[in-house]
Length: 625
Image 1 (cartoon, rainbow, N blue to C red):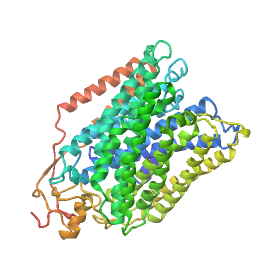
Image 2 (cartoon, rainbow, N blue to C red):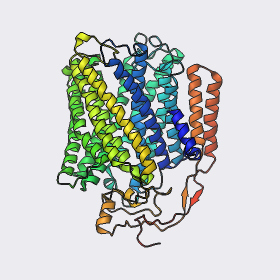
Image 3 (cartoon, rainbow, N blue to C red):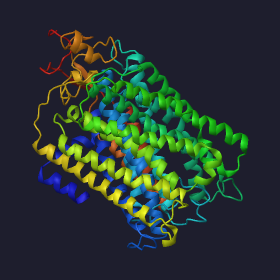
Image 4 (spheres, one colour):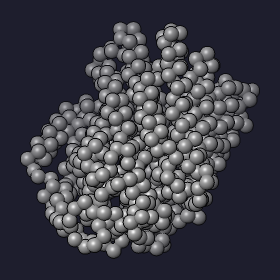
């Protein structure tokens, strides 16, 4: 993949463009960096998944070397990468692309911090991935339970890379959440009250709050794990310490993490469905309340991951009820989407297909979630393949379908050309069929007694047909990703440019009022907003123009700088030094990071003055001012 990227950049002479992206602080370019890195990790973790499925396709199979410890490495890397380095960065990428445009601002509140967040995320991802060639990947599963993850049972360095990589990446995610919170609260266009914000922006706001409260728990857990592994403490040990501390801290982070991944997808589906059903969202207020309720309840249910550790019937009952109660606001959202579709004039293009495919897929994931929340039943399902099936129905059937819907939806706004719709539909159908073929049989495997995290089974277990079907589905999903990549290349080469400011012609929110792609300052004049679906209202009642809130004047924009990238590089070097216990790597990382931060604090990062020009596609302001 790296060789292919080098060939592409050299053949099309894009090294200069790459450098401009590496030192950018602009939100849309940072969004493209997140999307590019996220899809690169997607291919890497997807390859892990195919290896896992080949190994499990037949009973007592011995595919290449992927049994025992190697299988554990593949399984751990697949889960860790997909959660932390695929789903999250792709969603954060879409937030970077769409949220500033949807609220009518020119950039995030802290552009330098935004770029730094990306490079910290990438440094953490690189740290975990280089472990594959430097002593072996982590092996204790993506949950890295203690005491299994401690030096006593997994002495190789893989789990050190896990704890340091997630720590560095997590700092970047935390900074991102703070940045979006400040941006959405303080930088909305005049007139855009909270209850006039698009649903994707609302979802980003709630998600940022969840990150702000959930990630510190993971930070503490990873610190304890790092101290136990690298400095010989026994905080999480089964005898001298308490292994349950890890489980509590991990799931205080881990369950809200599910909602951190799914709430932005809910926002994307809301925006896409209203656009292509040509109707306003049914029950907007109830959708907002449901978002907030889901976010709040997401913090109240972490114990349902620990029903079987012996916390007692009272604790289990309370957390079972709170878990089941999440079905209520989730059901409200599902019914509101269906009522939005009812009576709408629906356009069945690619982003809409991904949104429609999500509804039944996610409902299955939700129903199996309620089954797992039933304590006596959970004792049967626990650590079985049923849990694997449920988890993938929620994350892939919800988050990943949402990501694809968002990518197809905002692609023309971002790049100024459409992705091919025919190839997009092939991508959708092969992905959806492959998804159900892969993950639905896992529920039955779990009910038949197949445990998770095993690399083989016996012929007499009666699991061969189900596992083989699941493997066929996984390869179909892999093929669908190849169609998507081919679509990106073909569209880049052949799709017409200049699609206009509203290429779908049914855009409802204000990002569709400015050119595609937007100029670096987004809005030459900040618009005034008087209602929900402000752009739709403007097309219907204001001759297709939004009122401007200011005159055309010079704009101060942040300048590009390589310092965020260099800080990420020094953090990578320093963290690597901690893992391999080489003091001069640690010193270089520490001094480089602190030195660049001090240097940045004495510089004005917003000295670039831009003179905006009105654009024929821009529909803000009416008469020239």
